[in-house]
Length: 447
Image (cartoon, rainbow, N blue to C red; front, side):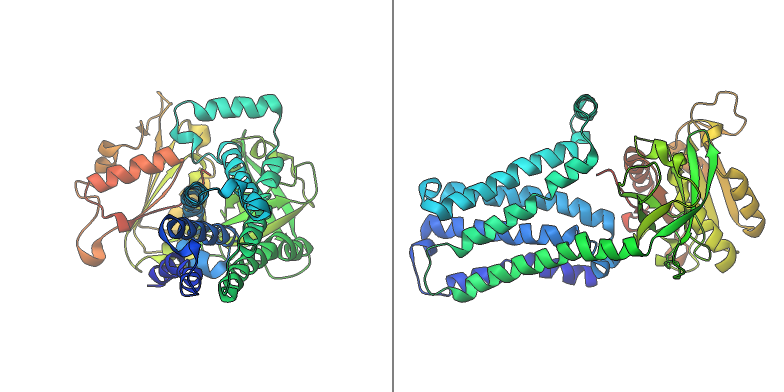
């Protein structure tokens, strides 16, 4: 219900400036093609304002929707807002030559377009992964020009200037008797910038004054480490649900001050630990952290937790590679809170060495008598256990001919944490085998 209400508020928010504009005395901009153009402009402006709120990690929104879905929604809305802004520009006759007000509007549109294109290519994987070979060429270009991610983030923040220019463009519009309309436009801008500015400055400084200290960096394999943290200034550690994640930013030490999301791999009863595999420039250096280094922790975030589904339902955890980390947290929590719960852990990896913390899982099985653990290796020809990939045949072999389980409360709840392509394929296989979409839970962070 809350999700529907939030979507309704979002969808109807352009109506306020539209009603205030068109209810005022008539003018040239309220008739014919101009009215259509003005409507497109208002929709674009309100959507751009919302964009800054969507990325500001507002807790009460994130708790209902989930951070990954908010970011994906943000990306799709960007396309729609740019389309509406382009239509607004092209449908008003003579807009480009209409003095200072029009020039400011055109400058704002150009900034939105060029920075959005730049961000779609260099800051996000969301679009480039949908075009064959685009990601490979993008990565080669980034390596060639040595483009640091932080500079891409700085460029993306120029969009705040574009929104200010868009607000000024509307405030300078030659319309009479529309003070309430212009007031609403300014309020939308002020709210968006206040929410965004709070996260970018006061909140970040507050978190920086209450950092976490690295207590241990434990190698789990040649390319994976568990980093344990504790509050540095004596404050209580953040409360989190098993399966949630944090944004992790090194403040001291050898690593760059970059923010990255990592799933929490420890029990909610313990201090925070994250288990990280080398998958890029930043994560390859995570082992360079040392005891005593300081880290900024922002979180927790996410809705990927067994606590949010029906109590007593059989749980099926499907992990791919390092995607096992949130399940480590959930299994530790289950061993204390619901040790008799039926749980299946299906873990796909390439090599046996990739099965990090496997002894810990085997030890947890002693406290979870109804835990069934199935590691599956795709590149170990001599492995005596399950081999291959997690496909439809393997799911039927492990889960039976009716993977969804029985009717009503006997239905299983499925959690998938893996690379995006694996999430998509496993979710598709499960639905083909009769599992309802609402029973399949995952979070994607391939942005």
